[in-house]
Length: 279
Image: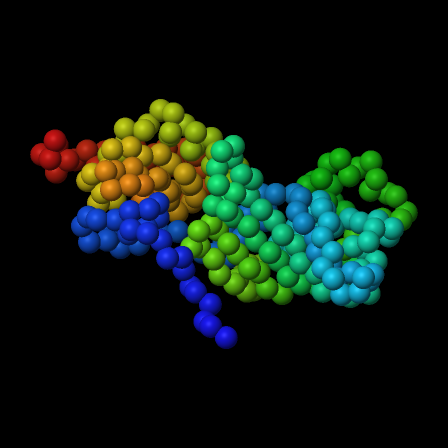
């Protein structure tokens, strides 16, 4: 069997591919894949549950399900005994759950992140039901309508392994222990606002950062595409084409205000004496 490729064969000059210019800088800090998985799964409340069908036997059966998370990031589901996925899980608990990032209008769906959690889907023990009920209602407030239906019950998908795909060329298997120990990114809810503000009001600052902090002096345009506690990502445009750029914050940022201060400091540094001398 041929060996599985470890990355994409990207043409020179294409987005994310090699670009002409100075020697690459040391890699900036960024979230681990376990942290990216935990953030992605925690930021959503609905995904695709796959169980092994009773009839026709053994075939993957997909269904949409709302979920909450326990302290270790295991999905908590509240399902009807009449549902096919419930009956499937009662006979064979091996299941998977797919969570995906939303795709902005006009964006490439394959560039967005997704995580497939594999594990065992089992009924929640009676002793754990009060905590699980509280977590589920906090994540799915509309469940208050049916939370006391007698034919519904709580299930937990105990994660055994995760396949993470964060877009082109960013993918790996993530172990359950690393996933459980990871923390969701504190900027996840604020990220869209930060990105929108930077692209609307500070496009020139991003070009400056690409030229003088990221070592891409030919950059003519730049826009922020992602931000997390450790840094941010931009798409830089130059005569050679488009390229992905990542810069790290001087120290991790847990709030939008911390990001603002870090960005101001980075731009001021880029505008220092060497920048002025170079025009």
